[in-house]
Image: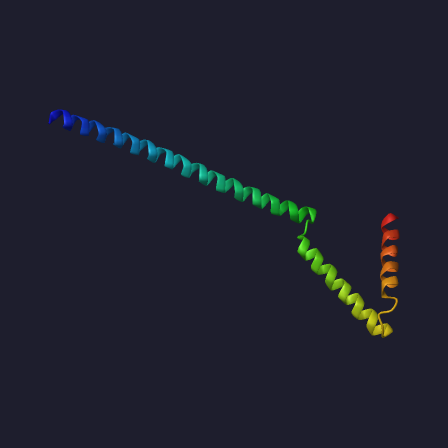
Amino acid sequence: MSDEMKQIEEAQAKLAKMEEDLKGQADLIDQKEKELTKREEKLQTSEEKFSKKVGIVDASSVFDTMVSTVNSLYTSYYAIKGTDEGLLEAIQSILQARQSINKQ
């Protein structure tokens, strides 16, 4: 019986050491996860500041603005002319004028 008790005690001691090691590794992983979260937050903040500074916008907002502008142009043109004939030529003229201004 003493051999069996000794083996049980050794197994319990070994198990206790394994639990300690496992807890230590879990604590280390938790610490690294917190550090990673902080780094991600800093990166996200930097990215947002950069986007604002450079003026990067979301593609969907650009599309919405374009659609809104085209709708406004159409409404204004139709209100003045009573028809949409010649609208394409008018828009092309606006774009050409804008392009010539940007080249200067």
